[in-house]
Length: 215
Image 1 (cartoon, rainbow, N blue to C red):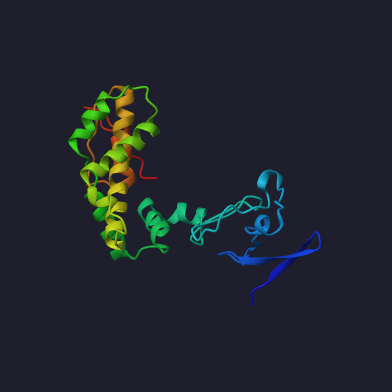
Image 2: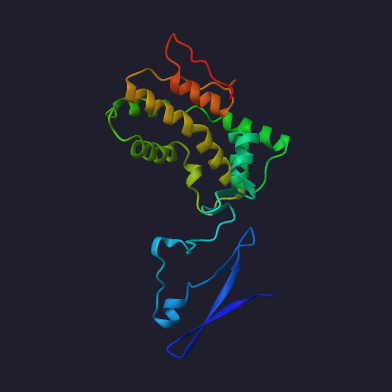
């Protein structure tokens, strides 16, 4: 049964519906308060205000709790790898082995980026802010993959776009890092897992292999 609170302002009754979150936390929806009464609320430091509803993240800073899709951050950090957590965030559940293998294989196949982007990166000033440059490079990817910008995309088309971004972002990020150091790019390796591949591209150098800590 839904609950609501009643707020009396200048003799006028304002109904505030209650909301229950993903982990049974309670809240009052004051979204229509200003329109109905002309009043706003004051919450210094936003300690009592939720900015949005989320089915992905639950956070309780006072208790030190951070959950993703119902799983604690400690549990995910200890027992799941990057690909598993990415799948969880996107699809709402941890993957089966078959789903994991399919997702991982699709991402690995997208490690390579268009050669022209390498030329563009080399022409960018080394001191340029990497986030601004990365945002520009991601926008440029749409020129090579116009299907990723289709309106009203199907679930399959959205999945393909997600996979492309997950595959190419580590490569572009590593290239930008290498460029800032004046070092040659290290090509992605399909024989390494997602994080190991990223670390290898970041820290290997020509003629000097980087030993990856499996932990």
